[in-house]
Image (cartoon, rainbow, N blue to C red):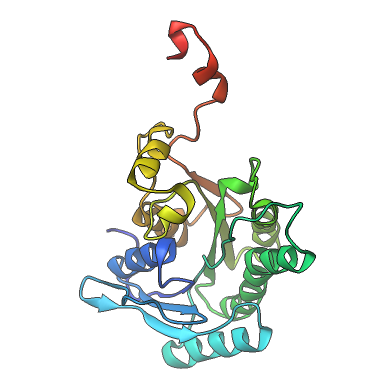
Length: 258
């Protein structure tokens, strides 16, 4: 991969499983040194091209732990070139039935924690001659209805807004962009889409005929973090395989809609 990231130091939050692991592997293939964090390590080591990510324990909602995380990365590697705010997610919970504390925790994890990590990473990047790049992993849930994960969708809408604001505040040293992700097939896809038949049925609703794989998201993230996107900041790159076919096309009875 021609990316200009050979030797770059990259932090991927939540990069031990699912989409995060795919992002971590893609940066490894680009020649970067990849550090990932989570509250606990993944069950399977994240490796690519004979190299592995470095894992550090951190709860990204805790300012003291995040300061310690970034300080440790700089102590080990001398700098921090790229931050990928990937950690997040939400279990299914109807808005009318979920508790205020549940909603607060979802917004904290998916919006306030990425802002916290970005703030602390920015203090390092602003001092570097080469600056840095931040990529926020967002979701199509932030721009369309998200029943069952309403607080998550609202938080991702906040991430999209935050991306544009930080891109202006922290320019020209630090570029900030987001990747807006649609359905992805990970090791946990069955929790959202059911068995293989359900996963295949969801894939058929996508114009490109399949869900994304984690590396699809990783490739776009590497691009936005790399010198190839040196003039790209404050942007949202949508990675959803063409989106969703409008529901009226399935309901219509004309031949043109089939």
